[in-house]
Image (cartoon, rainbow over all chains, first blue to last red):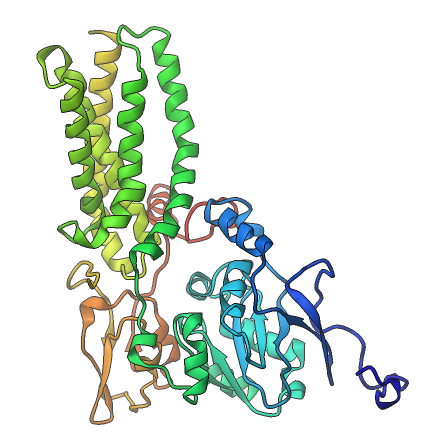
Length: 362
Length: 97
C-alpha cells in the first residue's frame, strides 16, 4: 500500500479513506491499518499489554465496568484477505481481549457487535447480541464487499440472541457456531469448523467462580456501609454497643455467602443456592458464637439473634449468585426463591428484633 | 464434578413431529441437553437445561419451546416488589451479570 500509483485514491468514487471502524490512535492494541474496498480497518494485536491486564483486573472489582468497551465494527488480525474467516464478538473490552489473545498467527476478520459493553452470553440473553444488530452491522461495515465467502463464525454462547436461519435469510451469510471458549478457536478453525462436544459444553470451574466473586463482594460492601451506619447510631444509646466482634461475625457471614459458597459450590450438599449458602453460614455463625463464648446465659439473646440473621444473609448472597452461575434455569431460581425469600425475610426480621432488644433494653 | 440444579423445573419442550433433524439444537446447547436419534432430535438430559433459549431461537422448524428468562435474584425481588417483570438491566448500576 506504500506504492501510491497502484492505489486508485485519486478517483473519488473508489477506495474511500473513511475508516470502517473508528479507533483511538493512542490505543496500543491497534498496531496498524489494512485497506479494503470499503475503507480502512484497524489491525489489532494478539498480545495483551499491561494496560489490558490492569483493565481486566479493575472491571473484575467493579471499577468502570459499564464503560469498558470498544467501538463496534470490523477489525483485522494478521493479514486477512477476502477468503479469511469472519469471527463475530461483543464490544466488551474484556471479551475482545479474551478473543484476540487466542488468535496469534491467524489471519481473520473480527466483526464486533454493539452489545453496550456487555459480554456475549449476557448480551445474547438480553438480545443486544442479536439477529438485528448482527444484520445491521454486516450492512454497516459492508462486509459482503470485503469477503467473498458467505460464512460467519459466531460464539456458541451468542446463540440465545441470534437466530441463525433468520440471519441467512436476511443477509445471505450462513452462521456456524464456534466453540464456547475462545481458547478452542484455533482447533475449531483447523478442523474445518468442527467443535467437539467438550468445546460445546459450558463449564463452571473453581477459577471461573473465583473471578466472579470480587464484584459481588464490592456490591455487598457498599450496602454494608448502611448497616455499619445503623450500628453506629444504635451505639449512641446502646447498653451493649456493637464492636469488633460483631463486625467480624457480620463480615464472616458476608464472605461465606459471597465468596466461600461460590468457591465450594459443588461440594456443599443440596441443590438450591440459598441452602448452599445457609449451611456454611450456620457453621460460621455457630463456630464464631462458640469461640466468643456467647452460648452462655447472659448472651443467649445475642447468640439466637445472630443465628437467625447471619446464616440468612449468607443464604441471600449465595442465592444471588444464581445470576452469575452457568447452569441455573430461571424457572428453578423462581422456584427456589418462592421458598427461600420468605424464610430468609422472617428469620432475618426476628433475629434483628432480638439483636435490637439485646442491644438497647437488656 | 458436574453441577446439578433443581430437578423437574425446566420448561423445555420438543415436538418430534415438527423436528426436521437439522441438528442445530445439539450445536447451540451449552449443556448437551439434546442428542440425535434416527434423524430426529431428542431431549436426553432435561434437568441440565438452564433455559437460555438458544435452541428455540435457532430451531428453523419452531419445534422447540422454552421460557427463557434472565435476571439475578435481587432483580427478581425488585420485580416482585414493584410488580414488574424482572430485568437484567444493569446499565444504571454495577450489580448483576
